[in-house]
Length: 395
Image (cartoon, rainbow, N blue to C red; front, side, top):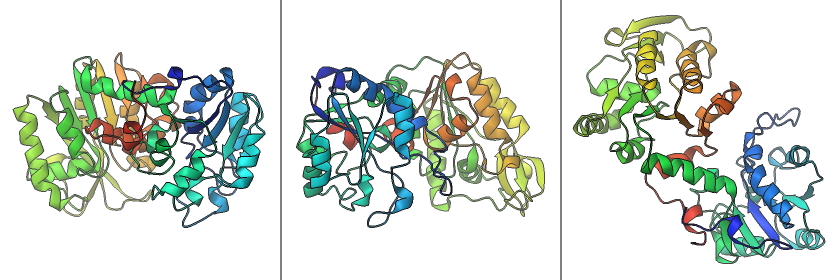
């Protein structure tokens, strides 16, 4: 970690603007937060600042509001949850910039906490507008980035603001970089990577960057269909990326050349209809009917994957093994989650839908680490520089 963290600066009595990722799912009808894991993840940084007598100003986005304020994307419902977790009152500003917000912050006392309204209510946020960034910076003396999930974005509250304030990493950001960086630099071997999800294109860079680090690569989910098609298998009506067939072939050749073992599905669950009314059938991968779609890995594949994973000392997983949103197509994904939760290995979950599924199954506590950043995790493990990290002060 070559970037300064909140531990490297004096925050006592200072106004500290903390970019958190409180982009949590909220029930539109009840206003109840359905998963508060992202809030929990930032608590160590917030509590550190309280303990060191800072004035804590929390800043986040929520959803994708279009062009201005939208009540259903307000961060107001988050306030009582944060207050409950901290065991103290939390203020709320109806805007993230402006004279009224500045006046409210100016009367804050040491150890006070306030949450600003959704920064994306201002279109200038996602444009990294310099005027908007300066307006945010006026609120504080120090900037702390603890939102790993948005570290790959060139937005005003992530990059632009660092041009106006001393900018350091929060404890969550530090932990994310240390854990994921460890996968790239010194994983315990054997090191297995389990990849799923819909598209090969989403993970090409990651695979290429990790070929010389992993021992075994296991591929399931929709992206497996593209690999199988490239190998000449019939995949029926399954979705695949036609423009990525050559890429898939190239990746498979490179895997072999690097001495990495690649496991693709040997059987699959197929259906005539991708819904809870679909008829299921287990078939060997070489006998997928032309009028069916692959929706999950089959039992033989699950067993082959299990045999490999139990040998590993490190496992990284990103992407479901099938259409897990429909319960009858979720067996492969859920079995992999339960398997990883009980491995005697370092298990890292790469954010996004995989993290959500593990959390919903109540297995997050049994994993070594569950990343809070889907796109950011993929970008970092692909070897890309993260703008939100690059903008912070060096040690």
